Image (tube, rainbow, N blue to C red; front, side):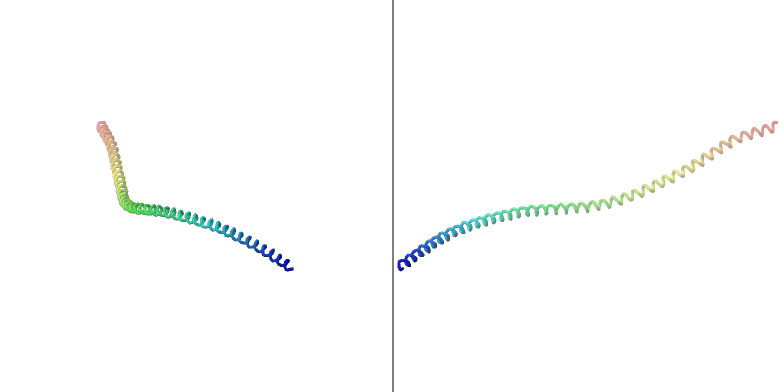
Amino acid sequence: MLLLSNLKRKARRRSIEREIEWLDHRSKSLGEMYRLRMDALCNERREMRKRHLDRLEEYDTNIESLYACKISLLLKKNCIDEEYVVLQDRLLVQRSLYERSKEENELNAEKIFLANVEYFRRNHAAKIIQRNWKLYRARVPLRKRRSKRLTCG
């Protein structure tokens, strides 16, 4: 029985030693697996950080170019605004000149029209006077002839 219990103990000890070896082996393989996984995660983190920094650098470059573009556009806008003010002033001057010229043209047109009306009135009156004078001159010799006939006859 002692032998049997000793055998059982030895068997149990071997099984525990095998189990310990298996657990050590498993622990080492899990440790290696965890180490590999940790290395992979660290590499991935490094790559992600590098990509993130590259994106930030690209963003900074884009923002700088956009800011420079914004500044140039603002300068152009200011120049255009100044030109617009100058053009508005010129437009006001041109409008006043146009209004003055328009009024002068209207006055000249009115004077010409009135002159034409006066010319027509005088011309028409002269034609009437001339026509009546011609008729009178034509009648006067006829009267003299009649009066001569009457006195002669």
